[in-house]
Image (cartoon, rainbow over all chains, first blue to last red):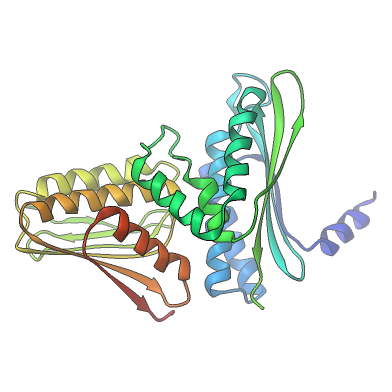
Length: 180
Length: 127
């Protein structure tokens, strides 16, 4: 693919922002700033804008807290990806990061549980966890997935791709519906 | 007792706690990666405030966004207020949300339910 074709592909897929690398605090702030500008440009405001922001913050903080390094023990190899795009009906927030194979089962169960719940059940589950869970050392407190499902009002779409005996690549897509 | 004033940033809310009047304001956004660092001084202030709070305490919470790791700490703030209520003081939480932000309204209801504090959930017009 030559560069123009790459460019066309990004245009056709309405890529608003695409990033690969280590997610630092500075990167998170920069992405949020860029997205404010991009959403201004497409005149997206009010509740849709807030949903996108909320989901984006959670997704990036998941990457910040939970990405595994590609090379064990080498923190700077905590490479992850982030891509924001849209089509006629939705905004898409796609993230990808390394995860230890042994953590897949627990994560998968959590997402599947969240996906199986209705809006009201999600709300109840959120209250339960808010009330009972201690704050985990990584700050996530398990509320992240529930919150993303609640804010987006959509099922969470995910995949695990095995990389080697230790690691897999976990990707997660969260959709936010555009206002009709 | 000293007031607690913390300026807001792109990641952390403005804290304006006026000890004598009992008006405790939290506003802006709360999306830091390290939530403990930000909230710990706030919780410590509230711990000492319990003994010195006036008869009426009003917490005005007006947040645009917050991340889920902040949500636990917001509950911790409310638990401190609950202690003040248990000391026989009058405590009210005013929870503000932008009028089309249904999630923020629901979140207010969630906190009302979980904290057991008296809440007023108040819609404000968008800028």
